[in-house]
Length: 232
Length: 183
Image (cartoon, rainbow over all chains, first blue to last red; front, side):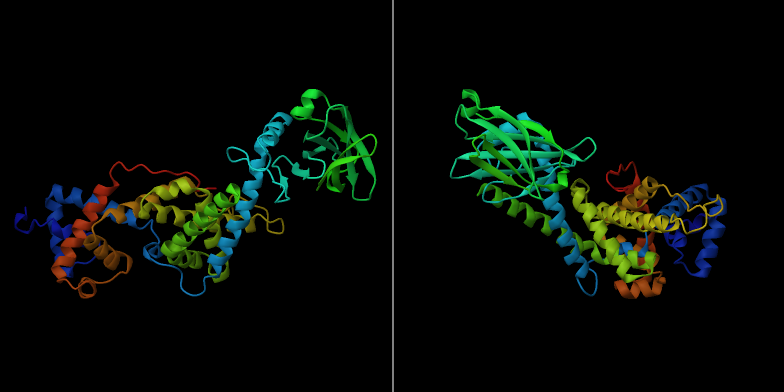
């Protein structure tokens, strides 16, 4: 056994191909007779193989050379996706009870991540479930409505759910869907109870107007007094 | 108004995240994607998409620099692979047969590879890492590496040995998070 040569430090260099030819010959001759070095060599070889999984570019540091157009485009995309993510969080508010809770919490911003549009920031919130949500307050009447529209059945109709506050007890009211061509349909009507007057009404119904044709949803009484209109 | 304030903070954080990823890893990602696609404009798209996926998976970014780099590179490669595949799947192309079916590479496997290797490399001492970079990745001879690193040739040899051994140690029992890569 060529113990005189036994220099394991050479094995890594051998595997990486950095030895002189005569050193390579010496290692070759040695490992034939030395199981310990043979094992070591095998493991180091396997290690080098796994380095091959990395592309050489993997070790470059810093920003790309040249223009930062890609950065600017990425930032723009983040800004726009963040906005739609924020809107999708409105999905939390599906269901009239959740709508009511949101409105009763004082309108605008509610606890958690659910963000409802406030009157300072008119906004139609798109829900992930193909619906839209919007809210409006009429400072003159004090009435406020949050309305959710969802396509119904054949998508020729729209389901209207709403939470309405600020309308006096005893008023006989209607939820009217106004389409872009100016026609309108009554989705539902109700009489505001004492409890609804102090808390909220939750009128809902459907009309035969395609969701994308809805221009606004109006809450009025049967004497044509308009309380609040939510634009879409 | 409270809502506006918190939105402003969130937006700053998002943009800072993208900027820091871009400044630290952008060069590696763009160079890699450029080689894979052979097209700088396409590579910039890949870079953009990669950064967006990282932003959507912020939990992968709490790991060390090496594994973040490995994750990003893997995502970039998967995006390129998926685009090539999508192109081939267009109906105008010839029908797929076993002979020309694009190789369905297992994303998860390759993720482990790049992330683990990057992580292990990152855990090496600077001396060891530098030697591996010069000798293995830049393909320099011992003499050239010795000159670049300013050490004697004998040191290059011994360090390359200990660097490989340190790498092997770093590999031992490593567990890697794979979340979000195939996103």
